[in-house]
Length: 462
Ligand code: BES
Ligand code: MN
Ligand code: MN
Image (cartoon, rainbow, N blue to C red; front, side):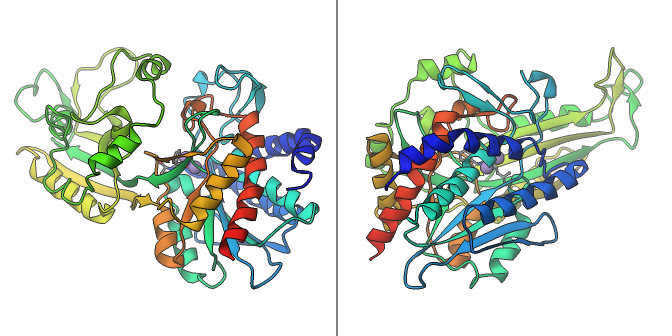
């Protein structure tokens, strides 16, 4: 690619400033108070796609937040890459743990990012990573080096389950027709250990409610004589794992794919330092399913975790009370072949069955999606691998991630194409946490690597 490095260094400051402008808009999809900001972000993305050289860009309305679509067709006989990303972000709270305000991006140095990282909600997940594609597109169109056709589909509801995108994809198969889908919304092992994500876990997210007596009670007058919903809920939750940290829901593991010895040995080659891992999290031991390594526990094995739990009195001081209700939000990360609808059913039946007499239990499914694995012998993977070899000087390691992008499995089902996950974030970038950040080096490396993917994918498709 001619002029790639000089183009990036010449336009670096502008690339950063434009991203800062996007990061300043609090596009929190989960909180309706930010509706106008989410919509404003969609407009800003549309304009950026036009400026980057798309023939046209449009705002596609849905029942929720709009999808921004853009495309450039240079020759119908050439392959088409569909780029997916999301412009919505997670809520920033707890706010007091941020060292600078979440929507006032600033550059700070970190141990992993000695050249500086952009601190802001969405810096890595996913505005920063999505915008790398817009800037790579700008480079290719303005230097006349776009080798194939491109379509962009940037949504605003990824962090809340992509329900409307699923409908959009089903209704627009012709419009979205492509040869490969390209996404930067995952991570890599380290800046000197590039990796390409070859798997994502599925998800089932549920909310549970345990109801005891019809009103909050004096814990002295009634304590010991009626079921306390909080005691019951915590006991029920505790019973969902056995002493080996296996999940106890009958049938839960039935469809879990067991990796061969060889595959596990291959996985174990990825560099990983347990001491550093513990140190970075300030924990004195790791924890999890007996018989599996940390890297296996967080990628090829399913999980069940409480994400939130509440009930009773949590204000200042003490109040002696037995609450009428207790609640929890629970997520299950699933692996390929586990069906999220089926798992949600299994959970619901089991949770209702284990409830003791004296309480009522309600399980409400939230959202979910299937897991995904992508083969490494596809043209898309090979093109990505060659691209990294060029810009990182190393062959990237294929690695399954523990995170979820539920829409990816639906893409394959509806659009019949494979997804390549070229993520440039690090696990330590604190996505979804306070002080989310994205390395400037990573941002620019992404912009540099993407055009090579286009080039090699087009060449290998011939
Ligand atoms: N970009 C993440 C997913 C991710 C991050 C995958 C890092 C692999 C590595 C995405 O925005 C996300 O947060 N997904 C949610 C699921 C969604 C249904 C809310 C998740 O994984 O919790
Ligand atoms: Mn994301
Ligand atoms: Mn996310």
